[in-house]
Length: 269
Length: 270
Image (cartoon, rainbow over all chains, first blue to last red; front, side):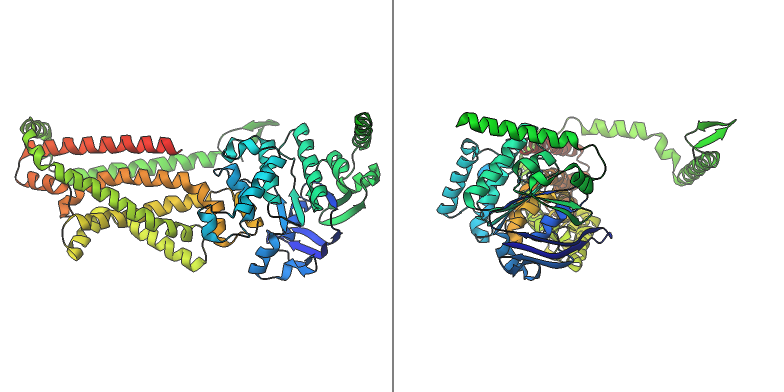
């Protein structure tokens, strides 16, 4: 569904952020991208929808090279890629509803969007999504009145109303507390499963990556150094991604939590 | 290097000795220039006139009281004109400043060439005082309120556009990024990503400029561009000091009211 071929990004400052990344993401797969700060995680997902222009290489979204299309075609391709941001990136002074509907901007002409005359189907879908993320009662609130977790839910609704095939998720939990982080990650993964969406989730929390990712890719200095299942993250692999550190605690906690979850699930059944 | 070593121990001083001497020298030169300039001014002043300034001021104040209240009937219309000049001028300026600001802001400008033109418009509008604009416009389109409106408008474009483009350059770029990522067009990016962010600044600037323009339009009449300045100039010329004092009071009241209104409006917006 998504295929990156020797993707390179070199910034004007000389930073070599991506050094020829090859990656293939099949339909419906939730991929967690981990790596230390500055490894190029944000650059990688921004190169996919060209918020950052790749220096060379190709990004195939169902066999169309995103990196090579004109700006008009790029707009149409961006509609198929929903993006969720670290600091939510909601338009603070617009209402929740306007923020969600802004996900339809790629489909609606300028004057309709200026006068907020979105098609009734879009508005109905916005209500459905707000209901799904549990914010129906907040539709008329201004975005800056919401808490962090609520804002991120609006961000998720905005990405989903695009009706995308792929979600690009950039550190969705970096500004959230541990409990909210898990709720948000769970919500994203549930929605991906419901709609059969592929997702690339940048995340620096290894535990969350292991809990929610179906596949883990480790990026270090612009190169993929690990690509495999969550339980393949051994102490040795984490050292390869992040560098020397005592990783035993991290790995153990995750295993315990997984056991807890299994136990909870068992109890529920 | 403020950290020095004395007797084997590090010592910290705010400045090194040469820096300290440099500062003393700079102060010395500065004071010498002030003293010399004072000397020049003093030579060209006729101290005989300055000596009785107190008596003159008291004399004028005496001739100014009591204000000629009956003159008020003739002032209502000029006051109304003055307010209209300020309001319409501000309106014109704000409408024109909006696109100019987008062309001048480095993050929204369509082309560097367009940006230089926009910046040139801003600088030229700002560098000419509204009284001078009015002087020229009275010559071009004749005396009256219209010349005043245009003068205020031309002078304010630069001010509004400059503050607005600074606000545009300070927006949060991730909000624009998020709108871009949805597949929005360039104009939609402006409408959804940028305009909501600068709207409070925009309203604040407009009201602030209106407040300034009320004050500026009170003097436009001096050069024949309408408003209460016309009455002020003719009263001064005919030495009708009781009328002058009334006009000054009226201007004071108008400015006070406009400041109050603008403070209220800005408070409500932000």
